[in-house]
Length: 313
Image (cartoon, rainbow, N blue to C red; front, side):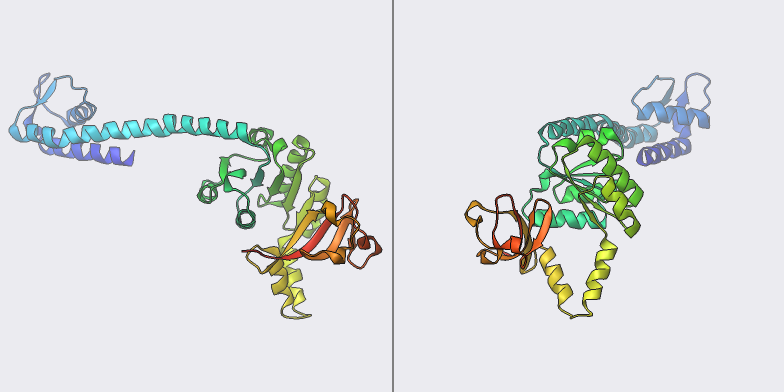
């Protein structure tokens, strides 16, 4: 619009300066209003013939300058039509195709600092970027998510229609960090209502909101500020503990913390006898048992093992 207005202003200025080269067949007088009128009908290739260029200079300007500007106007209009009609229609078509194929995907609500780091770590752990769907209302954040290969949707995740559009009921994991705790908890409530069995991880900024977040249906509640304080406190016992904990949390470290189901050939063995990793604890029927507990001396079917393994690659 700015470019089109600038070009029209340039044409009006020249036609006004060269108004003696124009002839008005109606009253023989070319006013400023006539110049604007002639400029508009010339630029849009309408041309009624009531005002015409009569001098060589004016005709030459019309042929060499006005005509290319007419072509630019056509490109502007075609580009605008493509942007607002064709491109958006195509994007809606692509989104419909993506929505039909969504299954076992990871849904990320909000793409701020915490969730963008989480997405990066998930990709480093082997997830396909196209299997991650990011929902946010900020265009710049969505562009960042799109740059790493994620599927994006600009929408408000507090609405049922948004979560239905990305098939939250088919997702295997929903990660929520919407900036404000109340918004995140509302999204969690909506998600749990639409997908009773999906795993929900939620980040809160205030410790007081951890219990409301769990009651809203979150399976995992993380307080980044609280966790950062715990890491800082470990320096009281030694300067290397915080580094090792950070090493465990990322795929870029030398070791990683793994949670997995017990393998059939491991049933009956003790947790300490594992050969692929260093067993720390088991979760049996929802209750954790450390490696020193009697329950960890005999692994049973259905146990969940937490162990430390060296990072490969």
